[in-house]
Each structure stands twice: as C-alpha cells, then as structure tokens.
Picture 1 (cartoon, rainbow, N blue to C red):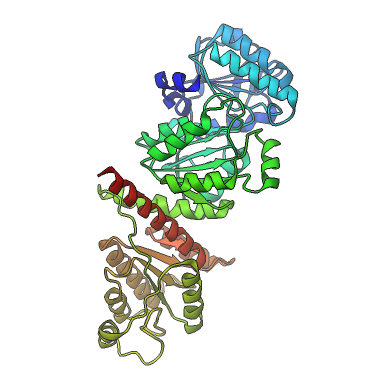
Picture 2 (picture 1 turned 120 degrees about the vertical axis):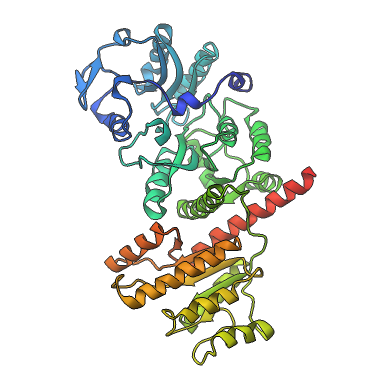
Length: 490
C-alpha cells in the first residue's frame, strides 16, 4: 500500500537524482536529453539505452540494460510502446536496482480497458518491489533546477521557491514557460504526475510541506486514481495539515469536463459540492480553471513570501481589503473604483481630517485626493511622494499605482518620477502593506524597457487592475484562513 511504502522513502533522489537512465532513448524524445544539457547535469551520470542509436546529442548509447555499467539507478525515464511496457519494467527491475521510475508511456488507463489492465499489472510489479516508486504513466516528468534536471531545454536554470504537482504535462510545461517569462517566476521542484498509479498527490504535498526549498505549492488536479480507493481521505487529511500556501486548480468542474478527464488521465473526477466542502475545511486556495489566473496568484504569493524570508520574519498576510488607487485620470479612477468594489474590495473615501491633511500638503486644483488619488502634472514633483505617503497609513492594505510607459528612461523628469515610485514602495513595505504597479500590456519597446526596470527593482507589476485585485484577494483569503487555523490551535 502507498500509505506504508512512503514512510520509508524520501523523494529527494526523485528530484535530485545522482544518476539517470533513459530507456529507450530515441531522437523523438531528445528533449529530455536537451533538458539535462541545459541544466548542466553531470553527463557522465546520464545513461542512454537504445536499440537503434549509437549516440544522441553526443552521448553514448548502450545497446541493452545489461551493458549499463552501474547496478543502482536513481531515476529511470521509461519510454517504450505500451504493449511492451509491463515486460520492460519486469526485465529492468530483474537486472538493476531502480529507486524511481518516470513512466513516460501514454495510452494506458486513460485510453481503454487494455490500458487499465496494464496499469494494474504495473501496480502489482511495484508492490512486489518496495524499493521502487513511480510517477506516471502518461506524464512529462520532472523539473528541478536544484537537481539540474528538466524535460525541456527552455526551462529556466535558476532555482526558486515554487513547487508544482500537475496531472497535465502540457499545462505543467506552460505554467513554467509562461510564469517564468511573464513574472520571472522561479521553481524549486516540479512534477507532471500523470495517471498516478503509484506516487500520489497527497504524498508529494506532504513532502513539499517539509521541503526547505519550497514556499508555495501549485496543484492541477483532475481526479482521484481508480486504483487507490483511500486516496480521497488521505488527500483531505494532508490538505488540512498544510503549513504552506497551496493554490489548487481543479479540472473537471463540469459534467462535460469530467468526461474529458476520463480520456486524459483516467481519474475519477469528484463533484463540486464535495470540493466546496474541502475548500471550506482546509487552508487551500481554490483557483478557477484558468492558467492565467493561477500564474497571477502564484506571482503575488511567491514574491510576498520571498520578501519576508529575506527579512527573516514570519510572513504577514493582509488582514483587511482597503485599497488606495493612485493615477492621473478621473475616468480611469471611476472605472477602477467600480471594478474593485464589484470584486469585493473597499475603496475608502477620504474625507474630513484625512482629506484636509492631504490638501495641506498639496492644495489640489485639478484632480482629486479623495481616493483614487488623481494627481496630474505633479508626478515628478516631491509633493507627489509626500501626498502618497500621507495617504498610505495603517488603514490601507493595498496600494495600486496606474502608470504608462516612458519613451526615455534617462529623461530627468522620468528619473524624478521613478524616484517617487521607489519612495512609495519603500514606505508601503515599511508598514507591511502591498504595492502594485499597473502597467497595461501592449506591444511597445518603451513598455518592455520600463517593465524590465520595474521588475529588476522588485516591484509587483500587473497588466490590469482586475488581475492585480484578484491576486491580492487570494492572498487576503489565505491570510484569513491561517488566522482561523491559529485560533483553533490555541
């Protein structure tokens, strides 16, 4: 049983294998080899077995498993036709000690009855070899910059703090590619897990919860494995115990989507009412069926947690939903207020003593200081910073500043404006609030350059008010869930 086997094993060698064997190595799966090359994996520990090729990407191929000169393999990447899959695993395990198997082969339980039979046979083989664990079948596999492994050469070589557990290889790949390019996200340990005939999502969550290299876990879940009837209960218990944020995106929310799940991973999708109950009972964050939103949310969680880790402080999450908007357009201010209010955030109206205080700093004649702060013409003036800082007190939790690109980043006026942005950022962070720059996305070299500068200097940058607000709300939601858990534990 999975419950008994995982107690004696760590997944460290799965993500940081000291040696890797690819069987059967072919040109059409050379992306695996290219991924290892890009990550600068030690090639003397990468073994290829091929019945047809003498070498691939400059690496020698062995004709059979018998010729591989080591007895113990940390990670076997198995890519063979499904009709010889069972025999291949049996044969390899009879000749070598294998710690982990990544079964790349598809066309098993998700495909037809014969595929289900193949999975049952593999499960039995693994049960009889308790020292061997497996991910898959039907999965892309592993990405871990710390372990210098990746299944695509386009993945970043830099390590980060985000772990991924995905039942879809393509979504897994796009999460890494899009996330790294949009927001410079960096990852710790990532796995495309496929049909889950052995290692379960619950086990990986438990592992990541104790992993010092991981601060946040993203899950794409399609359903519970047919072969493990107790996994649902185990998964619920693990989700309840998670100390780290888990962003959980579920496929198969609709009846039609559940049918699509069966043809993808062969999993058993569960009903919405059950998941509503699970999200209410656990600190897990429910993510809509949108990869874009998952990436947006991961961005704010990752950077927010990283800041507190650098300061060596306990992470502090937003306790309220009060927003200050800073811009230079009355029309955009009205739209922003409507959008934020409809999403459930508070845009407090500045009046009375607070408004008078702001007017004493800047006797405004054009625009407004009532929130949104509409301050045209003074963005490069020190008074812009002074008013903004005076408006941002403990009653404000989230500050959004709407800007546009600048053609000349060396312009004196821009430098003064940018100095003001840095000053606002410093003030907001000093009181543990969140500051986001809203820079609309459009094709422009000046926009690209400005975005790169903001990112380099550690600003949160979102392309729209709505996307930034939704991301903040998830951070707020998680903070509230943690408060309840802490209260219950007292």
